[in-house]
Amino acid sequence: MSYKDDIKALAQLREAQQGKWASISPENAARMRAQNRFKTGLDIARYTAKIMREDMAAYDADSAQYTQSLGCWHGFIGQQKLISIKKHFGTTKRRYLYLSGWMVAALRSEFGPLPDQSMHEKTSVPGLIEELYTFLRQADAWELNHLFRDLEAAQKAGDQAKADELIAKIDNHETHVVPIIADIDAGFGNAEATYLLAKKMIEAGACCIQLENQVSDEKQCGHQDGKVTVPHEDFLAKINAVRYAFLELGVEDGVIVARTDSLGAGLTQKIAVTKEPGDLGDQYNSFLDGDEITSASDIDNGDVVIKQNGKLVKVKRLASGLYQFKPGTGEDRVVLDCITSLQNGADLLWIETEKPHVGQIASMVNRIRKVVPDAKLVYNNSPSFNWTLNFRQQVFDAWEKEGKDVSAYDRSKLMSEEYDNTPLGKLADEWTQNFQRDASREAGIFHHLITLPTYHTAALSTDNLAKGYFGDEGMLAYVAGVQRREIREGIATVKHQDMAGSNIGDDHKEFFHGEAALKAGGKDNTMNQFG
Image (tube, rainbow, N blue to C red; front, side, top):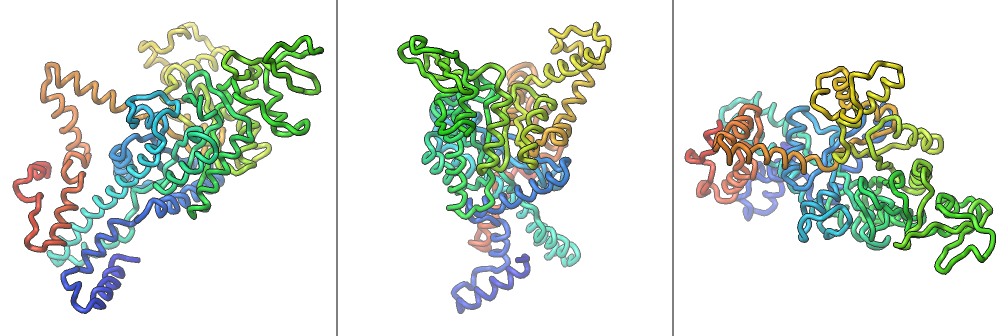
């Protein structure tokens, strides 16, 4: 409904009250409704699921239409990302937010900073989703409030053309509310626990949930050692649990990202159940490392024996009770994981790799696409990778393979600053710049994300400010390094009172109290110093 139509509908509703609502302005009520488009988290989940499905279809038609996001650990950070995206690019199209379990553990747990091992409170995950959308909805209200204030000024000035222009902007306002890909880790327990947590996340607004195939009680960060995977049957039960949660809550096109950590995981907690040769359990067990045995005397107390490719094999079992996979089987296990997940309810894949290498990712995706042609990935452009070193090594190796002279470079010292402006350094930066485009075209990556960028940007900016402020620069460190840049680069937070909702509150006071309203934004408000 347009703003003008809503005013008419509200005017009729007021008249039906026979004078009891005489102090209620239809214009003000319509304005408040326009500034609060989404009433519940489920409204958001349904809206954003539709966007994500449309984006997936667009990517299938043209791989240049990939999507991107940045990880968030606070609502304000998510809000400012979307405000910045609209400011610089004019639209939020194909830009999402990512909720990283790593950052929840490190920055949002009541236990204090924790490693990414699912030790934090699981309720903090839906809590952060709700917080992110609260701040994004406030960004809508903040932006629209400025438009309504300008409309009011145009109407008072009798400038109908300007008023019509502003009403059109209000009616066609693009929301800051975008899809959030939310990390549920390994489900924080069994399938029932996964279902219950998924419901909380969806009710908070999540349209997309990312689930990994590690054991929930020994879960590790994807870029650390000691990862332990589960048999497919266990993982598929959790995928089903998430799908049931979406269906129960009426988010029928909710998106599930199935993540496999098998490339770097050499251990499993369980031997899979198998009923006949070649079934899924048998395929999982075929990767287990072990020694062939020929008689019962080869079996010691506590040994586990399975039938593998028609032979009896004593499975290698560690002191921890975990079983070991055969070395070099990671990529094969990844391909099986991905095909199995897509054939059993997942919508997107996540392959956790140890380096950003288009060729490596493409080699696995091409095998998956032979079975599931429209397979698509969410890919972690992780700060855990040393991007500079990785791409310089890739360029060095490519040149060496081509027979180019690389004697000017020491491969063991490629991070050196002396290589920054060399042909190798510049080409490596070019490959880094083009990584997302190349990987989306050649390796099936639909969505690129950086899991924890603001963990690093907050640390870097704080370090720079502290160095100057507590050093010789004093207050100039803040003025020149922060405030002056905010003013000149048009960063809205320079008027932090406004960004926090002061002007919205003033306008509401006027709606509620009329001429008796005591407002904060008068001539003595120091925010006026910023124009």
